[in-house]
Amino acid sequence: MGWNDWIRTVEVEPSLYAADFSRLGEQIEVLLLAGVRIFHFDIGDGHFVEPITIGPIVLQWISPIIHEGGGFVDCHLMTETPEKHFAAIKRSGGDSVTVHYEACPDLSSVVLDARALDLQIGLAFKPETSPAYAAHAALSGRVDMVLVMSIEPGYSGQEFMPEAYDRIRTVRSVLPPQVHVQVDGGIGPENIKSVRDAGASLFVAGSSIFGREDLPRAYRHLIQELA
Ligand code: DX5
Ligand code: ZN
Image 1 (cartoon, rainbow, N blue to C red):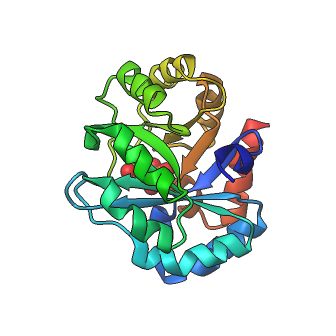
Image 2: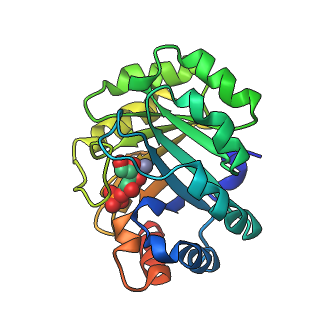
Image 3: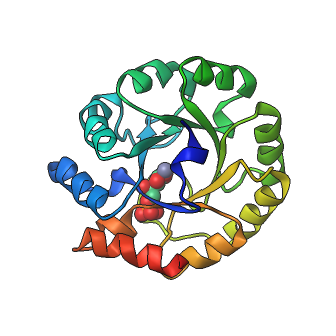
């Protein structure tokens, strides 16, 4: 099982980093019932990005809920030496690891580490990194997915950078169709369709879902914009 089995043409992925952590399990259940298939889980180490976010200790509690509901956990590693965390992520129920281009001088060996643990592997890159370089690294590294950051990684609730559209188009034009393009940061009902039209099929949404009172409604609103 991998990205191509999980994706129903397009997927809106709630970013759990923006959830109410006092009600995390409950919010996940509500979103599973609303039709969410893939949850995005942001791991930040306080080095690659400023904040220390969430990690395997939290993941181990929520992954059984997600898997029982037929879902998957997509882990975005905003960390140095991401491969050091793969085994703990796998043990805690993660299904996929996305590592940063800027943190992986030897991407091929990181990809092998993920495959050895039967984890799907994605490659993310920051707004200031050349999309052509990242896409070519993704091609030669044979990753399953590429994540275009439309904000500076670190925090939820930032504004979408419109320059991301060109980066999405560049990446999409270089990659073969089976490699999905994910976009993360500042996605909401006002821009999700344009992000799709630029070539993305996976949309991470933090505050545009968890910042609303009615989570299923916020999720459905995003889906409807894609219809
Ligand atoms: C931040 C994370 C994002 C974040 C997105 O660096 O990678 O996944 O939670 O949140 P929004 O959708 O609010 O920008
Ligand atoms: Zn993320």
